[in-house]
Image (tube, rainbow, N blue to C red; front, side, top):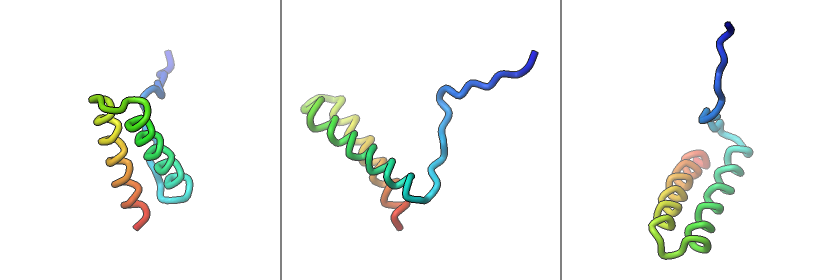
Length: 64
């Protein structure tokens, strides 16, 4: 039998470049939209805000 590799849950590393920055900007905006519009005043809103802050920090480190 041959070995099989599962790709579920794999992570593609972000390399500095326009595609990575555009992806992070999209993710940041998406998380902020969900936090403010879809789940306002809930614990899930706090979760999305925290995710957005993490994405923002990563984005800022790539921009430097």
